[in-house]
Length: 77
Image (cartoon, rainbow, N blue to C red; front, top):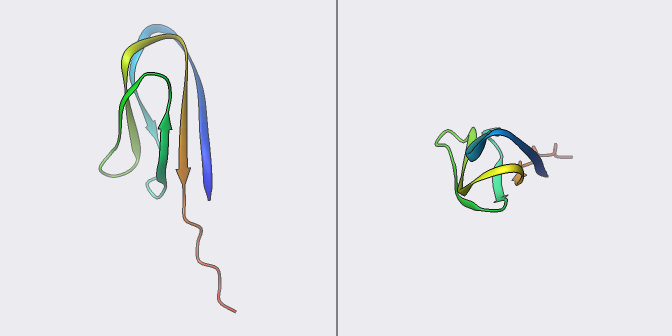
């Protein structure tokens, strides 16, 4: 099953330089998109995605994550 997370962030105080997103360990990351992303990395245990930006962001920023989880096996007839 594929899903997409779209997060529209409003940066109210200090500029955003990096962020961490929690994800289920059993999903596969298909893509991480957003303006000015320098790097992104999945944690060793698979429960977070760390995103680092090229330059600090002020005001508004959008993050898009594509995720996929295998469906359970269907029962045999």
